Image (tube, rainbow, N blue to C red; front, side, top):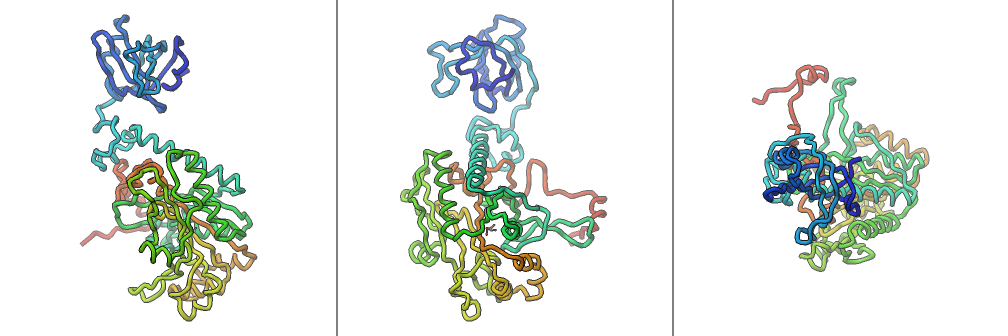
Length: 464
Ligand code: ASP
């Protein structure tokens, strides 16, 4: 059976079978050395040239060819040992070689960290780009972080529940992706900016503790520091917990996650400071303060929670109040009278988690009182009737016994940037798009066939 390169450790004298890619080759006269790369690392293969046929085959090998070999694990001669490689004390003397696939020369080197390579080229050949050690490691750690979160929350009694991606929108400030509904000509689904309404419905349903590693979709304008279109959130909603209880839970999750997966990192301050919005603005002139003691230190993690947010911000263009978070965020009970008299002064139950100056999570305690909800619709310019019809299902659901609830969504890709010491989101995602929304590997977005357009009842207007 084929084993991983790393598994030759402890197998000196044994026959093994390895398979993978030719990482590099070195010819030393009669000897040919091949570094064989697989998912777990590298192992040195040596062709000694005793078998003329085998040697000839080895001579043809080129980088990135896929091969399978049989051979014997031996200790390398002392002067050939490589302390920088996990398997560096050993090599495999090859007795059988099979070429499984030949390979073109890759368009860029794969044995560097890749930052120096044109990014569009890297994205076009993402499947090659991902062969580099750094990106492979990022994906593996990303997986481990996801596994950790799933286990942590499950241990706390949370249930992971999938919510629809083909749905109706919740306004959360970003432009929505729309999708024609073939079976209902003239109607559209939208891809959710978040599972917000569904997770709240799950609270009405009595699930009490929900989470989901959810994909969220936001059709935002190009920004250099963004990966366009979709992101992953650790989406959470709980019933019967106070804001402080929610924050403590998230805090504990991050402390354990860092301790387990990123032990080289140091958290600046535990417990994470809870800072009111006013204090943050007064003291740091920022609602996402970077509280690191030493900004040069790549291993410092400064978390803080920002609370006490204003409920609304004035939208001069539209002459209305915009929710600072979203329309389901609850005002502080004591500020409810201000909804009528002075909306600017209303504080909400929003909470954000900031890490090294980046907002990595946001959430709130929710409105459960239909009167307050109606008031908020009115203030943000959703006419009464429209508010009632667009969110009827929620208002109705809340009339059947709604528990107090709240939640948070953690930007999973976003949080991995400082944890993996990467400069942007694209380095922590498998198949990111360019900032302006192109998938250079598959060529999306692209035209669709006339027949498909017809089925959807869509006509493309030519640009004049
Ligand atoms: N839906 C919110 C967001 O995606 C998070 C929340 O309120 O739980 O930012």
